[in-house]
Figure (tube, rainbow, N blue to C red):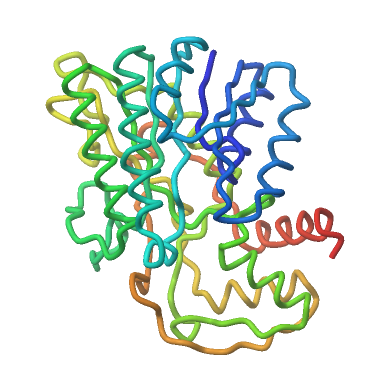
Length: 336
């Protein structure tokens, strides 16, 4: 296949590109190399991908007028996987404009490009933060998501709605994913696991929000990529051309569009994650307990019933395996 991946120098985009290239697909990777976190890490990821003959790296921002339309016209992808975004829940409190630019304008530009140059399947990354103030667990795709707690979550919900409208108007087969706390080698430096590892190894205290009791549905990146890769081959049917996969299916009645959770399905308390990290590092952390900041929720848990219905059972790597794999990568990459 010819595949365009936006955000290819990002954590998830890098792993997905590597998987697609290993299968022999031709991959065009677009990334804007924003300085939200270490640009050197992003360039190191792209450098790893550059060893593959079937990978083309393109540097540019989603917001740049005409860039995406011209890129699709030139590369003619069959599959577009849109992972590029301004990430981070707490940063959206400091710089909401970055989220409006990348997540709203950038996603609109992509939808316009796909409208002009149709693809077999458009896949979009959303977030478990879209469930917002929902308290019923596990989070199901059929739950109403009308109470985002941060502007980041609001922009992702808006992207889902925009994509549905384009799917309806122009018949674009579209799948939106909601990710749940992804971690693993080559991870993001702003995520808790990365921050804790750096601080513990340097002898600094770590700040533990919510007294360590919040639960997160940690999802190992290889499991996530496996699920995404399988979903590439399951484009939603057009209205009248297929039936829902089951009672939990979110297949739209008026568009070839569906929403799918991708999570580990096994929520873990934050303090249990820190315990596993301490064991992998071989040293203890000094913990400073703090209340949950605005926008954070106490628990996340994904229902993966629809995912399994569509693609079968996917791996669920436990943190006892995933965290040591991350630590091994961190030590190797940073010489720690």
